[in-house]
Length: 165
Image (cartoon, rainbow, N blue to C red; front, side, top):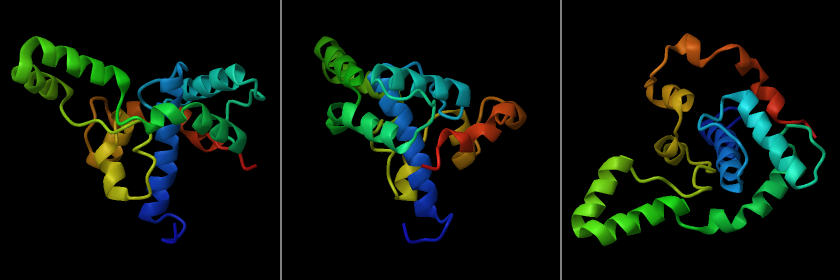
Protein backbone atom coordinates (compact mmCIF):
# COMPACT_ATOMS: atom_id res chain seq x y z
CA UNK A 1 0.00 0.00 0.00
CA UNK A 2 1.19 3.49 -0.86
CA UNK A 3 -1.26 5.49 1.25
CA UNK A 4 1.07 6.24 4.16
CA UNK A 5 1.83 4.48 7.39
CA UNK A 6 -1.79 4.21 8.59
CA UNK A 7 -3.85 4.99 5.53
CA UNK A 8 -7.02 3.05 4.69
CA UNK A 9 -5.24 0.47 2.53
CA UNK A 10 -2.64 -0.23 5.20
CA UNK A 11 -5.24 -0.55 7.96
CA UNK A 12 -7.47 -2.86 5.92
CA UNK A 13 -4.46 -4.95 4.84
CA UNK A 14 -3.20 -5.43 8.42
CA UNK A 15 -6.58 -6.10 10.01
CA UNK A 16 -7.65 -8.17 7.01
CA UNK A 17 -4.57 -10.34 7.36
CA UNK A 18 -5.27 -10.85 11.07
CA UNK A 19 -8.95 -11.67 10.55
CA UNK A 20 -8.10 -13.82 7.53
CA UNK A 21 -5.59 -15.75 9.65
CA UNK A 22 -8.37 -16.36 12.18
CA UNK A 23 -10.65 -17.67 9.40
CA UNK A 24 -7.90 -19.93 8.10
CA UNK A 25 -7.13 -21.24 11.62
CA UNK A 26 -10.82 -21.98 12.14
CA UNK A 27 -11.04 -23.78 8.79
CA UNK A 28 -7.97 -25.83 9.74
CA UNK A 29 -9.66 -26.88 13.00
CA UNK A 30 -7.70 -24.76 15.47
CA UNK A 31 -9.60 -23.63 18.58
CA UNK A 32 -10.18 -19.93 17.89
CA UNK A 33 -12.90 -17.56 19.03
CA UNK A 34 -15.19 -15.81 16.54
CA UNK A 35 -13.68 -12.52 17.75
CA UNK A 36 -10.06 -12.34 16.58
CA UNK A 37 -9.32 -9.68 19.21
CA UNK A 38 -9.71 -12.21 22.01
CA UNK A 39 -5.93 -12.40 22.01
CA UNK A 40 -5.37 -15.39 24.31
CA UNK A 41 -7.76 -17.53 22.31
CA UNK A 42 -6.17 -16.45 19.03
CA UNK A 43 -2.70 -17.21 20.40
CA UNK A 44 -3.93 -20.65 21.49
CA UNK A 45 -5.19 -21.28 17.95
CA UNK A 46 -1.85 -20.20 16.47
CA UNK A 47 0.00 -22.51 18.92
CA UNK A 48 -2.30 -25.40 17.95
CA UNK A 49 -1.55 -24.82 14.26
CA UNK A 50 2.19 -24.53 14.88
CA UNK A 51 2.16 -27.79 16.84
CA UNK A 52 0.23 -29.59 14.08
CA UNK A 53 2.64 -28.29 11.44
CA UNK A 54 5.72 -29.08 13.57
CA UNK A 55 6.79 -25.43 13.65
CA UNK A 56 8.46 -23.69 16.57
CA UNK A 57 5.63 -22.94 19.01
CA UNK A 58 5.90 -19.14 19.37
CA UNK A 59 2.13 -18.37 19.47
CA UNK A 60 2.89 -15.56 16.99
CA UNK A 61 1.88 -15.01 13.38
CA UNK A 62 5.45 -14.84 12.14
CA UNK A 63 6.40 -15.11 8.47
CA UNK A 64 6.88 -18.87 8.50
CA UNK A 65 3.59 -19.50 10.31
CA UNK A 66 1.60 -17.23 7.98
CA UNK A 67 3.19 -18.86 4.92
CA UNK A 68 2.44 -22.36 6.20
CA UNK A 69 -1.10 -21.30 7.16
CA UNK A 70 -1.74 -20.00 3.65
CA UNK A 71 -0.31 -23.18 2.14
CA UNK A 72 -2.33 -25.48 4.41
CA UNK A 73 -5.60 -23.64 3.77
CA UNK A 74 -5.22 -22.87 0.06
CA UNK A 75 -7.97 -25.35 -0.86
CA UNK A 76 -10.44 -23.73 1.54
CA UNK A 77 -9.50 -20.22 0.44
CA UNK A 78 -10.02 -21.11 -3.23
CA UNK A 79 -13.60 -22.26 -2.56
CA UNK A 80 -16.36 -19.71 -3.01
CA UNK A 81 -17.67 -19.84 0.55
CA UNK A 82 -17.78 -21.78 3.77
CA UNK A 83 -18.50 -25.46 3.04
CA UNK A 84 -20.99 -25.99 5.83
CA UNK A 85 -23.04 -22.99 4.75
CA UNK A 86 -23.36 -24.47 1.24
CA UNK A 87 -24.45 -27.83 2.64
CA UNK A 88 -27.16 -26.17 4.72
CA UNK A 89 -28.34 -24.10 1.76
CA UNK A 90 -28.61 -27.12 -0.55
CA UNK A 91 -30.36 -29.25 2.07
CA UNK A 92 -32.89 -26.54 2.90
CA UNK A 93 -33.42 -25.89 -0.82
CA UNK A 94 -34.13 -29.57 -1.44
CA UNK A 95 -36.68 -29.65 1.38
CA UNK A 96 -38.44 -26.36 0.84
CA UNK A 97 -37.65 -25.34 -2.72
CA UNK A 98 -37.69 -21.60 -3.34
CA UNK A 99 -39.02 -20.83 0.13
CA UNK A 100 -36.20 -22.79 1.74
CA UNK A 101 -33.66 -20.54 0.05
CA UNK A 102 -35.48 -17.44 1.28
CA UNK A 103 -35.54 -18.77 4.84
CA UNK A 104 -31.82 -19.53 4.88
CA UNK A 105 -31.05 -16.08 3.47
CA UNK A 106 -33.07 -14.48 6.24
CA UNK A 107 -31.33 -16.61 8.86
CA UNK A 108 -27.83 -15.83 7.63
CA UNK A 109 -28.65 -12.13 7.46
CA UNK A 110 -26.06 -11.29 4.81
CA UNK A 111 -23.83 -12.89 2.27
CA UNK A 112 -20.71 -14.20 3.99
CA UNK A 113 -17.52 -13.85 2.06
CA UNK A 114 -15.18 -16.69 1.33
CA UNK A 115 -12.47 -17.85 3.69
CA UNK A 116 -9.89 -15.31 2.50
CA UNK A 117 -12.12 -12.53 1.14
CA UNK A 118 -11.47 -10.34 4.18
CA UNK A 119 -7.74 -10.30 3.29
CA UNK A 120 -8.05 -7.17 1.17
CA UNK A 121 -6.46 -3.73 0.81
CA UNK A 122 -9.80 -2.17 -0.14
CA UNK A 123 -11.22 -0.54 2.98
CA UNK A 124 -14.84 -0.58 1.76
CA UNK A 125 -14.67 -4.30 0.99
CA UNK A 126 -13.06 -4.96 4.38
CA UNK A 127 -15.74 -3.00 6.25
CA UNK A 128 -18.52 -4.89 4.44
CA UNK A 129 -17.03 -8.24 5.52
CA UNK A 130 -16.10 -7.35 9.12
CA UNK A 131 -17.56 -9.62 11.85
CA UNK A 132 -17.31 -10.04 15.61
CA UNK A 133 -18.16 -7.66 18.45
CA UNK A 134 -14.99 -5.58 18.57
CA UNK A 135 -14.42 -5.12 14.82
CA UNK A 136 -18.12 -4.33 14.33
CA UNK A 137 -17.89 -1.71 17.06
CA UNK A 138 -14.75 -0.30 15.46
CA UNK A 139 -16.36 0.17 12.04
CA UNK A 140 -20.08 0.47 12.72
CA UNK A 141 -20.35 1.56 16.36
CA UNK A 142 -22.52 -1.50 17.11
CA UNK A 143 -21.78 -3.73 20.05
CA UNK A 144 -23.68 -5.88 22.52
CA UNK A 145 -21.30 -5.25 25.38
CA UNK A 146 -20.04 -1.96 26.74
CA UNK A 147 -16.87 -0.56 25.20
CA UNK A 148 -15.03 -1.00 28.52
CA UNK A 149 -15.86 -4.73 28.52
CA UNK A 150 -14.95 -5.19 24.87
CA UNK A 151 -11.58 -3.50 25.07
CA UNK A 152 -10.32 -5.10 28.24
CA UNK A 153 -6.88 -5.74 29.65
CA UNK A 154 -5.60 -8.19 27.02
CA UNK A 155 -5.71 -5.78 24.09
CA UNK A 156 -2.29 -4.27 24.79
CA UNK A 157 -0.91 -7.63 23.64
CA UNK A 158 -2.26 -7.26 20.10
CA UNK A 159 1.10 -6.00 18.84
CA UNK A 160 2.81 -9.03 20.33
CA UNK A 161 0.83 -11.34 18.01
CA UNK A 162 3.11 -10.35 15.15
CA UNK A 163 6.82 -10.87 15.38
CA UNK A 164 9.28 -8.44 13.88
CA UNK A 165 11.22 -11.13 12.01
